[in-house]
View (cartoon, rainbow, N blue to C red):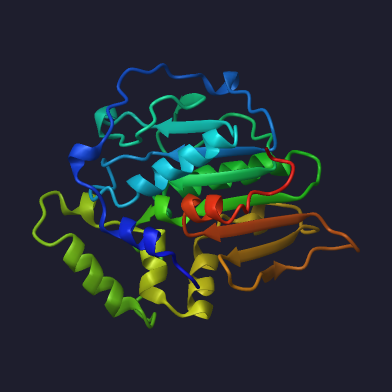
Length: 270
């Protein structure tokens, strides 16, 4: 797996003074959200309420810039905790929507969903499970979820003591949270940092399969399900049925910076 030098610079986080203050905004009711086009960026709870290191701030900001350059609608999900701790540089998404646990109540009509922000195993998981539930009610078609890994945080909940990289994870977590007050807020790594701890391609893919939303409980079994980690080969998680089954693809990229530089935006979504 290749990680650009610029992206590596983001792994050290930013000081709290770099946060934007997005206190002056109006919430949109879920039933009033209207998503035009083939793609959407959902930003789930991007704040120091959980990510005290702001380890994902630059990843979130670059993803939002990318989406706006490509005219992709941007939805910010926020909960009831202090809004001044939300650290997005851009305070003018298409929609601000209340979501206490990462849940969504609006229709996801685009076939491509980009995600940043959010606790990988908690609120972001709730967001993505709701996305799949929404898609499952719609006609069969090819679908993609793109995880922008430098903009997603985790507390390593899915890392198990038996994992080869468990000691590295514990060591790294001990360093980033060393002697800090309210330690749980700081005990978060970006998903890209976790990939850097794991290193081995096969182990990285195995870990990512653990954290996927439960497509097996949500989507029809005729879907072909794929997982793609950056420049690794595509993994087939479910073959689907028929000669040309619809495809549900989980795509993991290091950063929106890389996506922009590689001119990798899918055709038909401009």
